[in-house]
Length: 192
Image (cartoon, rainbow, N blue to C red):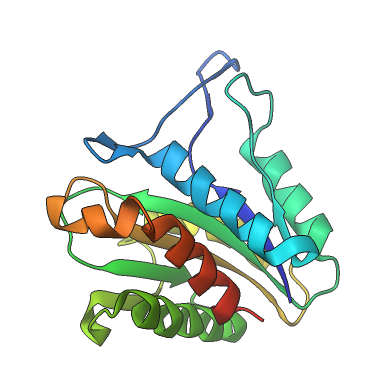
């Protein structure tokens, strides 16, 4: 299975069409963009040719649509997963795998990642939630996942991972140090 990772943040289009660097959520643990880039990079190192990373650099010019299209092109007819990789904010105490509510493949991939990351970090099952990105509760996630649903062949799905809460001090162990390697290994183990 090919894993095409789109690290969250790192770019944002302004109202005038220009691009500027967006670090995402920031705390003493670091910047969301840097954390998810580190996990994506480690996945590519460990996974070799079965992993591709579709990222923008600090100067752009990549649009989100171009990164998503490149991820789908890398997977081709599948099987594969487009992994939108993010860190959450808002003080929660769980990790999330969100999928399109119409996608059985996405639901299976979300469940598999939750089991894998739960094992890697010894999380209680209620601390790792596979959820359908149903509107209106999950509009932001649905905005990322919906466009993939219409262009994916059978055996391919988009999943959005929230690997921890950057503003929850209790999640430092999920977002710093050896957590980067554990997240990468959990992604690779979940999606073989």
